Amino acid sequence: MHPGRSRAVPRRESADAAAEDAALDGVPVTAGARSSAGSSGSTGASDLADRYGRTPARRRRDRSILIGGAIAFAAVLVSWVVWAGLDGDTPLVQATDLGHELLDTRAVEVTWRLSVPSGNATACVVQAFNEDFTVVGWKVVEIPASDRPLRTFTETVRTAQEANTGLISQCWLR
Image 1 (cartoon, helix red, strand yellow):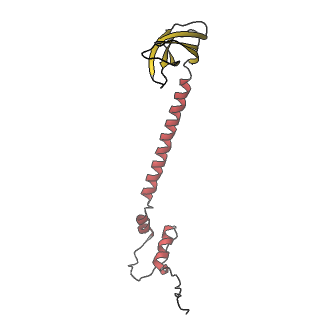
Image 2 (cartoon, one colour):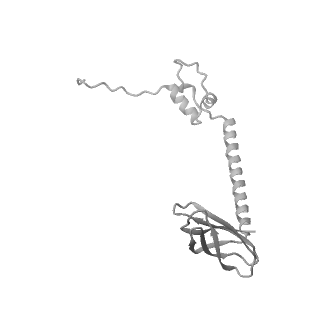
Image 3 (cartoon, rainbow, N blue to C red):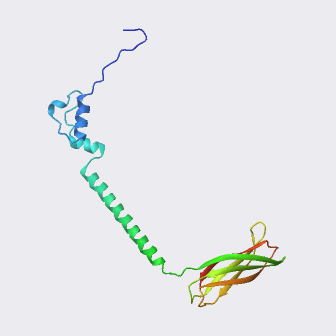
């Protein structure tokens, strides 16, 4: 042997470990494959399956959980499809800012275009902002139904401070 080197010891697998591996793989264990050293010889496939959690009851439980999860996922998916399909029946309201004009230090005039299906009354919120984008004035504007789907509006908003812009915030059906 060379100085500084250790002697390699061949790896040996015990007969009990081989029997456990065979039992876990579902291969029947023969009596010659087991060692009697340190063992009473009663290690069987069912004992190993119990030890490592591979029992028929556990398989049934895992399968039940998987099926229950699949059913819950399908129910949520179907509910979402129905909800999304029915949600498309409401008319679409759309507002677009066209501009603003600062009238004085306490008022701003906002102009916007409203697109709404004919025959629907709407309401819109018009806001005035200062240079820090803080709301310094707002107003809810009630808009009556009309035969025209696209209309332009101008509204004056009174402010608490000097505003530097005015915008349409949101619109909805009444």
